[in-house]
Image (cartoon, rainbow, N blue to C red):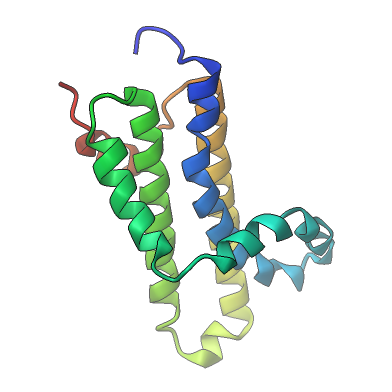
Length: 159
């Protein structure tokens, strides 16, 4: 990239990070017990969470499939935007993997104090990761998240 993308591409590049942000907020709800002041900010997320909840169950799978085939693999879109779409999908998939694996823990651990602290640590780590990706997208930079950005670069054809 020789110059900074235009402001509309930078703003549009933030949209793929909304789903990981939604998924992160689900994990952050376990942080209400040790940090009750976080409940005050929940009213800011209700409209988005309600809209996502009303979508059909197959929507997320269709979104990933269409976004990958129609945006990431097409060379007509700017490289910066395609990179942000792949990064958003990879962060979302990573969070879903963590959620699936954490459900395999015994209920005594998952619903106990250890599970609460684990969910809180995952939520804050992902929250800061997604916010860093959004910050980089708004400033017109590529987010350099270890391992994830390498996987994103591999998915995007340069020619």
